[in-house]
Amino acid sequence: MVLAGNKKAYFDYFIEDKYEAGIELVGSEVKSAKAGKISIKEAFVRIISGEIFIMGMSIVPWSFGSVYNPEERRVRKLLLHKKEIRKLHDKVTQKGYTIVPLDIHLSKGYIKVSIALARGKKNYDKRESIAKRDTQRDIQRMIKIR
Image 1 (tube, rainbow, N blue to C red):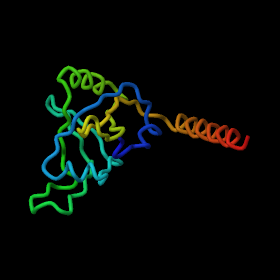
Image 2: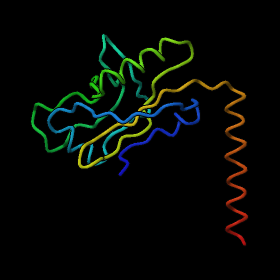
Image 3: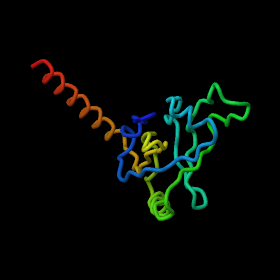
């Protein structure tokens, strides 16, 4: 079940490799995330000293929580194997590659984030994507009419 998505990632980047990572959440963040009060629209991923973090992700504080509710946009650690982090780090050091969050979903009761190794698109690539999307939409309309 998808809790939050990042449609813009598919428009702005060529997605190459996908990974599923756990998120280190604190206290009432889990309840708030499962309630769908989560956003990754402005989120990005950074590798800092061998650990991987997601920044800019917003989890609205749980309304029934205590005084100790964590900050809405705090930096959260992602849980990946060291080998995967090293592989991502090697690719990101190359020019043009970045790590973007794709979606946040539930997997066997745990909250996971799908991240991807991505390469940025140029403006002409984006125009191509828009044209493909429009033609697909037209085809679907024609099929629906018949």
